[in-house]
Length: 193
Image 1 (cartoon, rainbow, N blue to C red):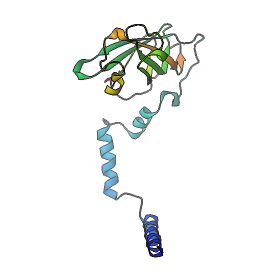
Image 2 (spheres, rainbow, N blue to C red; image 1 turned 120 degrees about the vertical axis):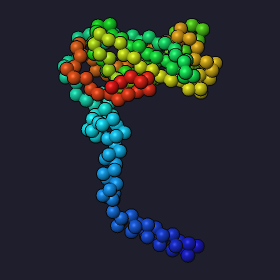
Image 3 (spheres, rainbow, N blue to C red; image 1 turned 60 degrees about the horizontal axis):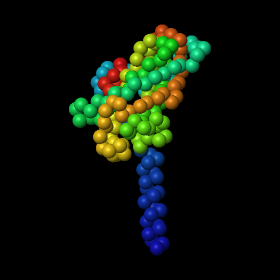
Image 4 (cartoon, rainbow, N blue to C red; image 1 turned 180 degrees about the horizontal axis):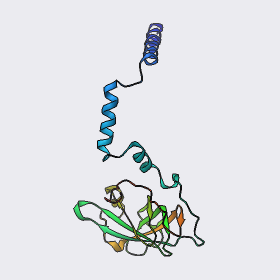
């Protein structure tokens, strides 16, 4: 038993010394190649641009003040089973024409039409959307459902009338669009910058 313990202590000591003295900087040629591969894989964007796109909207400054009335948001859901995908497209609009950002949408399967609340549904999905809705426009987003989710509702995505959605929460709102829109990367729907 003591010989095994001594061997274990020696191996641990050797590994500790090895990690302590090894250089953390990559070889000179590797750093240059990493820089070039980063720029070519991100469509020529700088590291700063990519880092800005990766921030959530709420991490960015948004000039202006909240409008006097809260945002009045509505969501329309459409089923798109084309191409073997089980996508739900969400169309979000705001009644006052405000700019609104950062949403959580609750989507549920209505079944035979008798389910009116998400809590009563066989399938309920909370879908966060880190996008913005431009003033007087409609925001389009999508969500692809997977087989284990669809198994809860009979294995089929069904028709547009089988689904309902509401905006449960939103981030900030402004009466008008900001002077400059924050950059957003592409998403699963193929929308975005």
